[in-house]
Each structure stands twice: as C-alpha cells, then as structure tokens.
Image 1 (cartoon, rainbow, N blue to C red):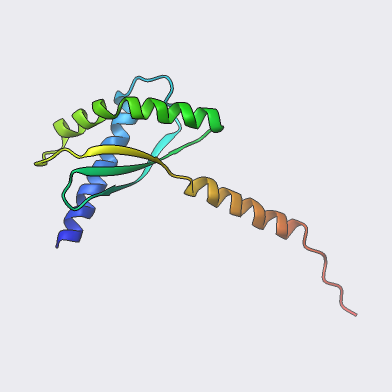
Image 2: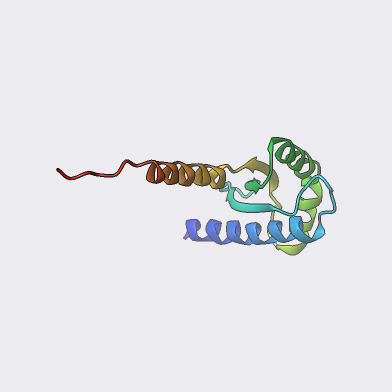
Length: 122
C-alpha cells in the first residue's frame, strides 16, 4: 500500500513540476525543451529527486540547471500550494541522460546496419 501511495505522489509531483517549469518559470536560462522524466520521493516525503532532460549543447544544459537550481525554492512553494501534503518536499534537480543515451544507441545501431557488408553466397 505504501508503494502505491509514493508512486501516486511521485506522478502528481512530476505533473505539477512539469507544469510549473513550462508555464510559471520565467528564467531565460531554462529552455522550452526542458522535460521532467521522473520523480523519486523519499519514504518520509522530505526530499524529491526530479530527473530533468534538457535538449541542447553542454552550455545550454549547464545554464538550464543553474536556472532550475536557483528557482528550486519557487518551485517548492508552488508545489506546496498546488498539492496538499503534510510536508512539501525539498526539490533536488538531477540531470537525466537516458534520452541522450537512447539516441546514441539508436545512432550506433543505425551505423552498424548501414555499414553491414553484403552477404555473398558461393
């Protein structure tokens, strides 16, 4: 029962934080192509790791995380006003590289398939 409650809270946090980043956050360092991929919350609901994927080069990603970390208090306040919990969790933004990793693997597989030698029968 506890697992499903944490899963529901994590999904609700993910939805609300995504909405806050997309619609409420006015920091120019955070690009439009910023997406929340996953939220992990501790059992005591004190901390939430928010996994964020940012599309762009390394400088864009660094600037985006600088902007997100500086807006963490604002995001926490907004989450506290939107979701009714006993504790509003401390938000920790973490870079999620799974999308970039998946694109890299896809490119490698595509390169392997295009460079595969023709199988000659003798």
